Length: 116
Image (tube, rainbow, N blue to C red; front, side, top):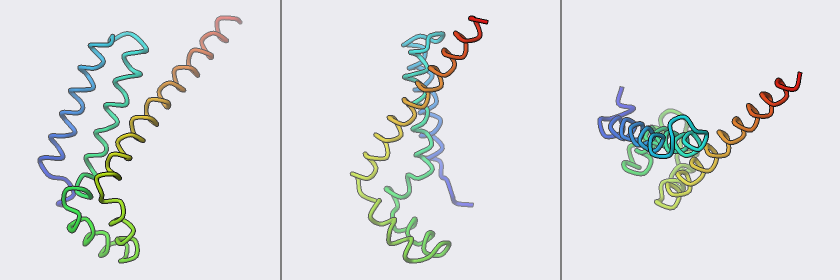
């Protein structure tokens, strides 16, 4: 369907392996391992959007046909290297704090269950 190419697929797979490597290096059975590996794994999702930065005109044309020219024009402002860096930084930060919140929630639940 042309939505993803071999380079994007390879990026997703590589990110998965790097995430596993981070988990192994930090500690496979430790919370810290997940805290650092999960954000790396989350970067794989950005591969779906890589054409916004690597083939902006193709991305623009597809958005204009599917959603409209106004939307596509808005996407052009996001096709800079600074927007890519911002997306990477936000993905890392949000995924790190998401997993941290889940661990805290789990630990609080476990501590409360042990009190009963």
